[in-house]
Amino acid sequence: MRHAPLLAACLLAGLSAAQAATVQVTVLARDGKPLPDAVVVLEPAAGQPVPAVQPVSQTVTQEKMQFDPMLSLVPVGSKIRFSNLDRWDHHVKGGTPSLLAAGTTAFEFRLAGRVQGQTPPSSEVTLEKAGPIQLGCHLHGSMRGFVYVASTPWAAKTSADGTATLPQVPEGAMQLRVWHPDQLVDQASVAVQVQPVTTVNVPTLVQPRKARRVQSDSGSTY
Image (tube, rainbow, N blue to C red):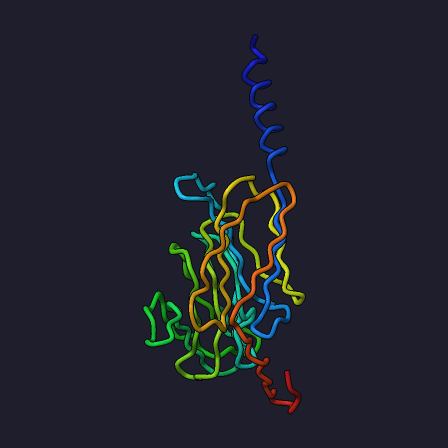
């Protein structure tokens, strides 16, 4: 009988694995073309438990007058280290994106320019609140970046073909949220009934901006 608890745990694990599904989401821009760099998040129906997410540590650099990566997706509680690789000073401001106002500031600080042969100046923040954060630099208004903080383990960014795959999703009723850095209004959530293999197409009103070209000291563009 001593093996009964272990056997029960194995049976439960097998049942959970059998009920785990894969969800593929395709997000489309306003013109019907695939929309890359969209964040898709699945949330359980109201009243259902949400598994805890595991925080991570990630680095966002400032280089050639840009945030790199432009969009980061991390779980709640994660730490992000901002590092300045340019020779000149940068400012880092993180706040809630807003069309009508500057938004609520979550953090802000200044990073000195990098000195050759020395460790790049950096500062770290911990992100405890779920949702999007817009990054900016007071010193260089054209710089912008984003961090999306997810509160569920089922979150991903769409690739160049507008698709994102979410594995190990429990079957049943879910709400799908889509967010993009260039959206002007929030996208309404979509009800999804998750089955063993689930595909969802989500049209949006988002028309992504063209990539900004930056000229380096040598005259080349990026």
